Length: 102
View (cartoon, rainbow, N blue to C red):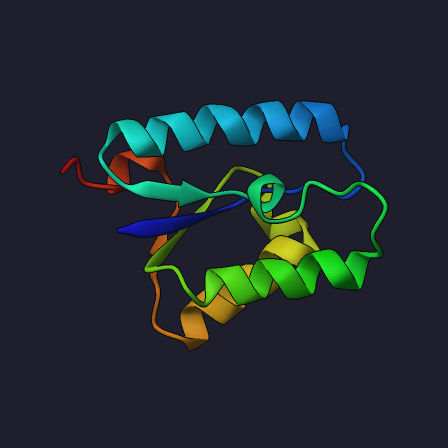
């Protein structure tokens, strides 16, 4: 399964967010799944917000599911990703333990 990792980034330290994303990506991949983070999709720090979100949604649509990390419900970007996943019938995970090991 290909899983998109959704986490709040705007208003947070990008380096800490990238570290958090990398950590959870490793945990998902240890379970035998492919994991995509926003930092994999667009590492360029000089784009506008709408460019990041457009690329993230484009990639999310190619995934089977989404893992929403803590804090997602306070992030407009994460809420958009969650709603997109819901509309397109993606599997929605709120906790790593919900993802089965392969």
